[in-house]
Image 1: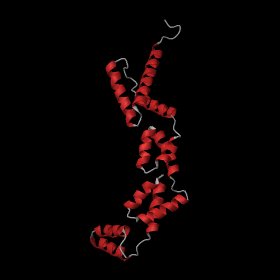
Image 2 (image 1 turned 180 degrees about the vertical axis):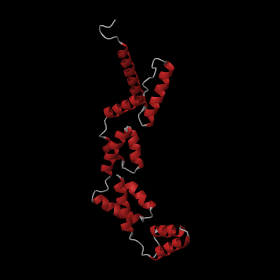
Image 3 (image 1 turned 90 degrees about the horizontal axis):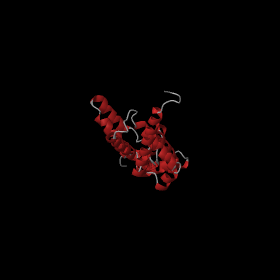
Length: 207
């Protein structure tokens, strides 16, 4: 019977240890019965899910990295899906909420991240439906307000242009299209200027 990749990994790891202890460990691994690959796979998947939500593709990649045979990984993950511990639709919904809330990413940026994690396109689109254009624009505006310096001299054309480039670039890195980015930055700069003018208005009755 050929040695499984998992068993081979254990033997090589033990053999790399130095000294009598390492030699004894290698001998022990060679003498120990090979662990059940299904139990190994289940333990890996449970540890991954305990750390946080995972897509099926992420779990497949982890099992492959750990040397679990492909057919064993498929069977174990099928069972986890049956009991709804692995569910790409639920994973996508949670992922969209988390990335929009913590990083203020646009839908296009989150879509790319879901694709990289192996989530089916239709499943990703359904999860992204919870985000509206208004939600996205509000998040972009919040990002701009956070990054806009309090003491910025918006009357200085050079400084204003520099701020516009920096803020639009920041929104672009988070996946916002240029039209949305420029529009939001323009609105927030106008709002900042209007607020500054209001502060300069004299109080009623003041000399």
